Image (cartoon, rainbow, N blue to C red; front, side):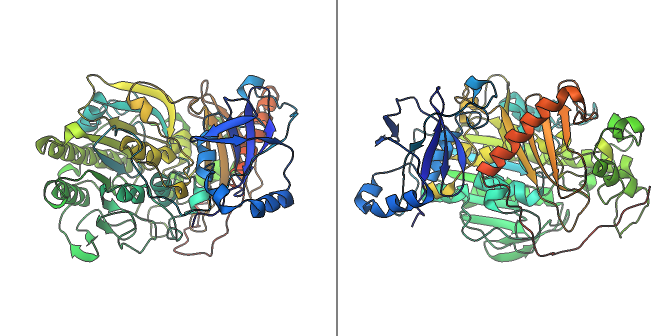
Length: 593
């Protein structure tokens, strides 16, 4: 039974842009193209009643409505969110027509919309864009470590990913909403922010009842397979809901000789894990799937996660190459003069480059930074080889012309920037990821998209590409970006993104933080520590070296962005920061400066 979802359209501006609150506490903007008297949602007309609905009034209306009447209402939570995402932000704080100024609201408008019938299984939404989908997820692959990227090391070789970009769409501004393995992967699979799917760290499993997009595909009789790193539920590699075929391992796994749980039976394999996972995926494509059924393959690599162990054939491939280190790597006054204190202090933590100088510290086998950089690049090259093997299989089996192939990294990764070698924070090299999509048959020439795509957009994009409507219980926060693959743009696409990360007991150097990033500015709020916030101008300071939070000329902008950030977080229910029972190993020592 679907839980009733109440939507109260409580605010109206002169441009037809409402903000609303539902029973889950979500508030967003709904753009109404029809007059206020009537508005159509999914083929149903609703009469609008002017007035203010209190909690008590809402309860009375719920009880007064008959089941038959309620059955005709379809403005569920998911529909409300979909409508809300069509506007950049709610009028309560940001109506474009009001130019970021708050407008006094003249009308309070109430709409009761309840769903009390059992959810119908997903059905075909339209003619599918792709018969099949292959989604390839790598781990900690930076956005700029593609040899086709202008910022990549000149000696890096990724010819197969380059070809994928040459025959498809390169999303130049792809981001994750939480830069940590398990939360980001949960966002990809659910289409939800971390504060909705509640996978907040790498130690705990997915909450019971979480719905993955693969379950909607299964319900539409599309065959599904998962191969590789799952990680959510650190020590549990058992098959998860939504997948007809399963081949995974516990936690982070190993770089060599992996043990895989294949459909409930563990098997030991010999070889480099990236190669082994590709072999599992290609075998399923060639021999094990149902030949006459549509399919979605989710191939999830361990590479290029730390400790960056290349395949033996690439062990010393880049050892002699020169490294162009980022300027923010230096331990200088200029780099830290305006930064929050925690940024400088993190240099000496388990994820800081000055921690590495101590050698075996906390029994941590971190190599010197030059070796780490070269090994990271070699891992990327080996990963690229395996993408090439997978694409060759699609070509040889005749599947390439019917299959949408998407490649993405689950997080970014610092390689010296700000003195870090990790992710978690809201700096660009942490939150930006590579995202490439090759439509069935490929494109005659590469297309570059500048719009922001997020990890929460993957689930709705794949579902729309395969012509499957999401189950109403899915509650996607993201939007489908499928239109970009056809050369157009979805209406009123986002002009900013939200980011969230919760402090971890295991790695306490990075505080809880929330961020709002626009095309030009980024505002970061730090929670639970005595420190300053951050404001960066990404146009004039793309490396985020100069924090503008204390500059008088930027005080109004900082206040605007702070207000917008917290209004949107509160509206989405993101300010209930969970406190977890400590679990796992704690790495909290630091080198003294």
